[in-house]
Image 1 (cartoon, helix red, strand yellow):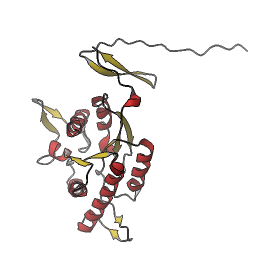
Image 2 (cartoon, rainbow, N blue to C red):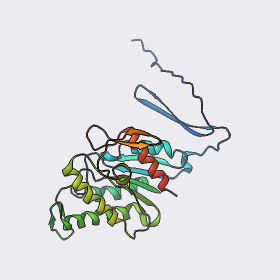
Image 3 (cartoon, helix red, strand yellow):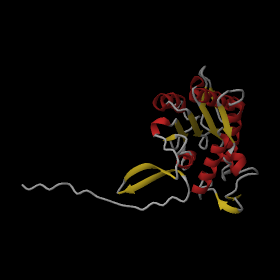
Image 4 (cartoon, rainbow, N blue to C red):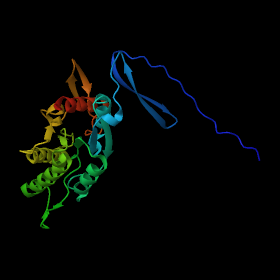
Length: 247
């Protein structure tokens, strides 16, 4: 039986940088990706091993923001994305157990998280009581859980966490829950060193839901057709807000 060597695919692409700096280049071919960093015009190359780890995590509201952060902060951090679409702080204790597992795995210097668009589930308190959505006791338990997660991501002072509030969705009932969630997030961060809130609700929906918003002199679409998730443009704006919030 004759045997033949495996065919090797070779692909070439030309790249011309438009300005000086450190560029991250990615080549995609048949489901494979090859990444490289290119220093242009005297920029100092920084090995990935020298960069701190940033964890981008949360539910589907973080989709797009994670990759936009990776592009924007390529020279400052290695952004590791670990998302769980469809999850929620009020859905059992999944995030209370996921947060410690993430910090153990990634040891992030910075964590950026967006979760809270699919809340409203009953929650049990540490003493076994059940809190139904969405009265004051429910909000109090939600606040407690978020604060526990924030402390976990802060890692005893070795890390910091940037928690994103949720822009008001189009659905009125969901919007009511999101409003309670956002207020709980703000309360959870009060007096907690290392925790910072990025108010995406104020950026995207300062006066209620909107599909378009003014940005750099023109109106851009920032919400997808489902009335909840951000478009690619919206995700880029959110990533810009996170980057500006970082010292």
